[in-house]
Length: 408
Ligand SMILES: [Fe+2]
Image (cartoon, rainbow, N blue to C red; front, side, top):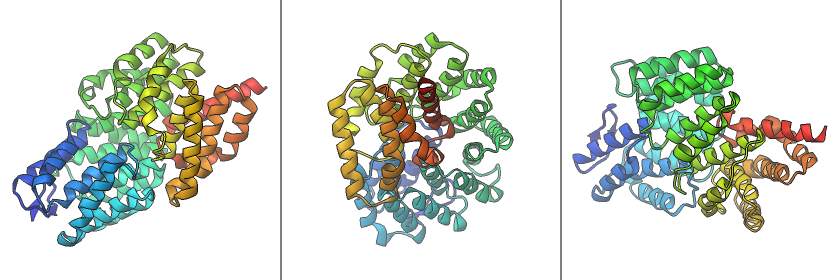
């Protein structure tokens, strides 16, 4: 047995595995480095390190990989093969990972929450629950997950500031803006590199339309989050929202080119930001040049993924915007086959909500504005179920409003 820096015991054959796990968790907190690399290097030489495969697979899922991603499958099998040799807490982690990989993301979040009842300092469980709820728009659960364990934490524990950062975002998404801002600012004071806490505060400022405050907040913290390779693009995206509101479109395009579009094809969350920003610019009447053509090349490998409705819709928006009718047809056929063949909560969300949003956004690009209203309006109060944040999902209301203006 080994003990990680939060005091959790886990199964490992080699003493150096502890350092690898701690490094991975440290990286995960600040969205930097190579947590997957740390974990896999350790797991490949430590035959007992089931948690290495478990966390690696979860990180891939949370990054937007689908359960059919060959690496996720491999990691799930590797973790399960070691299941009988690990503690009940680790077994519960592996079971939650398997549940998430099967498309039951909310249920997986609840399984990680259940681990926290007995192990409230298990930061991996807290992070996994937080990410799961975020991915399926379960804002109240996301808020409560942190609030449940917070009384059992104090400043002396590693990652305490990061827990506040998660709490801030959960509070914000649930609409508790004052508490969210206070908690987020406290988190950043404790851990200036806590870019997720910076993000929580930026969300509050966005939702409250505090345009100048939002620009100032992100600009003044930028040097602390610009190295956070897994989140920096999204924070630049956040900065672009108030910049657009203040009419600074040239700066937004420059930020897009320099800081947002510089992602690779596997960074699906970053691809979502790229698509979202170009779409928002065009809604404002701004020409984006050939940027859709460049972007579609990064998205095209995900046509058969259907990992999450949110990504599926952004993929459809990109395909239609880049003029890829053939690819779009292939995507819609693949999506249809997925919802017919796969019975999970994820496929149900894609079938009932995601598909309609895809068709609505496609219709908007084709200038079929009545169809936009026809597709999106009936599911409007269900859109939260596709996951992402309130600010991200705002794009559907903006598009619906623009369609209504055309129809009126
Ligand atoms: Fe965000």
